[in-house]
Amino acid sequence: MRVMMLAQFYAPVVGGEEQLVRTLSTELAARGHTVSVATQWHPAAPAFEIDAGVRVHRVKGSLHQVPRIFKEPERQHAPPFPEPGLTRQLARLLNDERPDIVHGHNWIARSFLPLKRKNGPKFVVSLHDFCRPCAKKNLLYHDAPCTGPALKKCLECASAHYGSAKGMVTVLGNWATVPFEERCVDMYLPVSQAVAARNGLCTGTVPYQVIPNFLPDRPAAAETSEDLSPYLSRLPVGDFLMYAGDLSRIKGVHILLEAYAGLAGQRVPPLVLIGRVLPETPTDIPANVHVMGRWPHSAVMAAWRRSLLGFLPSLWEEPFGIVLLEALAEGRPVIASRIGGIVDFVDETCGLLVPAGDVLALRQAIQRLVDDGDLRSRLGAGALQRARQYAADAVIPRFERIYQQVLGSG
Image (cartoon, rainbow, N blue to C red):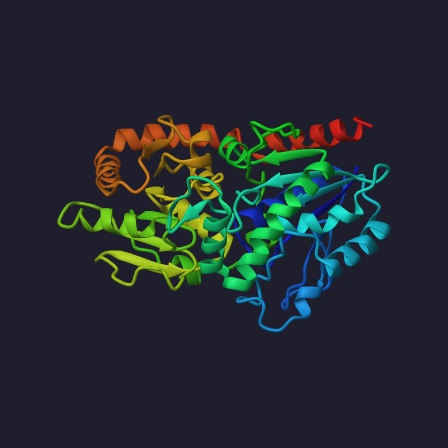
């Protein structure tokens, strides 16, 4: 098959979604498919390159020409509606690549909608977040779980997040485009049951199948050749606890720090935080906590191998929580919030789940796993077994079957 991925971001931009799209693309190419990626322009990457057999095209849309519209030059988000410049660039690439399947990820996929034709490529869309009902994609209202969309509430919330003009355009553009998207999509692929439910797929008539995130069967060649000593030399000697991800409120970092600080004076290993430091990142750091900042993915995985256990104390409904899957793949038990897509794959066989935002429950779970080596060993063995169910060789065939299914639907 000839498959074209539409990805808002791609390497060198690295995050959970970006890692998944890159792994899916390279694994499909390794299985004999012709794979291309259309992604947004990045100042530190070439307009075209071949990445592990995948043809990567980086394109500029009309909004890239507007000064100061993006806060982060390296993360220039696609709008929730067809962007004329991106649509023109995609039309050119479709003519060049001639895919059988267009597989969209995030809002850049909506720039393909005007190009969808009955006799053209089939269109599947992976849902990695809550982009259909929520302009911020996280279903949070004033840092608390949102009870549901409403025009006035959504405009106020998005305006506070994006600015008044950008917020209004994002909300109205998103709501107006969703019905158009539904008429064009041949299959939605939410990454968890929570994503399916909160995007309104379970009660609607649009076709969908849940296909979870997954991990590559083998590390990328670039990762195996990296010198990781500058990073790993900063880790504590001996056992340590670990969190990896953005150091943000919605990830519950402040809850983790409060829970950990309450263990002062007890026999608890150091806590290592690896991830992007944001303006909202707590500055009052308890003793024995090491804030490392952002690390390359290979260094994060190496740190997991040296850790005792991992955390994801999220406050928002995590669509999936692939960082937990990475910890499980290294045989590390995890402690996480009982929320969102996390509950699809973390249970008592591989970790402990606690109520989101419950400092005391998180503190007790930490103490329990630190004190009980037999429990850690049992959960660690379960972690390895659970991670095997989410390896690429177990999940990639599910994508291939979906592609074949929509191609055969006429």
